[in-house]
Length: 149
Length: 149
Length: 149
Image 1 (tube, rainbow over the protein chains, first blue to last red):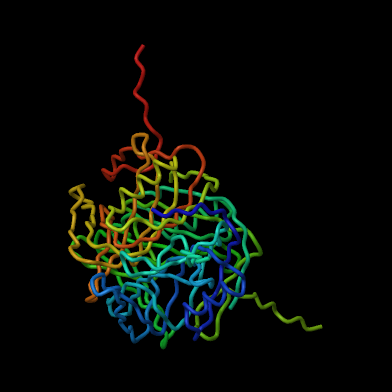
Image 2 (cartoon, rainbow over the protein chains, first blue to last red):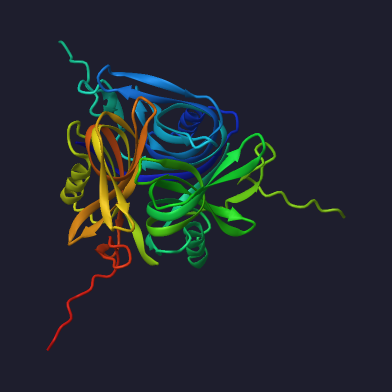
């Protein structure tokens, strides 16, 4: 297990913008506020979304378009660094008005209304690095290029 | 984006009461403890529930009755002020014993058993005000009546 | 309502181990780090899982096997003490690549990849004790054996 001991940083509650893309808007917030690490949770509604499912055998994301207005029944995840920049990783459960629901990796979604809770965390930078077992970019130590002298 | 910088207040873990209505009970807790702003998350089970879906075109909530015992597979949201009083806004994912699930805005639910995590937040009061774009009451600056002298 | 006022302890972000059982691994983490009380939230993917549904009439858990790779679309819960040892109580929403989802009490699951947020809480020990109304072990005061002198 790769475990990082953090301390609490700032806390934000934000009303995200109608019409904006939710993952980008949270990423922009992180960049503007110089947030490197955080826990996030959101509720609200989207006008549409794309959800990802990672095929554990083929090692690639399959994306499902959710074309139509949906409630964000649950959305949680984190912010950490990918190649030195804040990267939002969030999963979500979406539901429409006819009893259908969709769940998975939140690739993107257009905001109708959304309320974000963001708990910033301080500590050593938490980097995503390629993981050979899963094919994903997971938290770990950055490998430095070997120096040849 | 409307963003509010908060600091951490008190933290509560609560076992809610069997037979009580969950949204009212969290609201009562907020009022009794003088909590104005919070992040909340809960798990447990309900004996029944009503879930809402906000029709983004018609601008009204449609409510679905979930008549029968369900697990609270996920429930998260926040507390802020509506007309000066603590207001609970929570979304949930519910599941019964036959593989069916429901997701949306938690209008009300009768508790079988429920465990609440509540992170109070301090800062300027966070008010819900009418939002002309969505027809919802969202976080924003309270407009004061114009003074005519 | 049984309510416990806590203060914030340590915060951990952890990348859990591929191939490990998720509930056991969080329990082991709690034991190793001497964590007695916490709020937890996780996202990721499992190679398989067992989800529980508590029958409120029969007062027993029915377990559904989710045989196949799934995203952890939502997972939240808490850590408290059961018979003096840290006990993980988590609920989850899982989704496969064909639009199916499952939701309920997370009995066990084999990790493909998982990212855990753990907010430790300090305060009086929070114990699970048998609850006669629900048949569950819920937070409450531990009853001591009556002394007969």
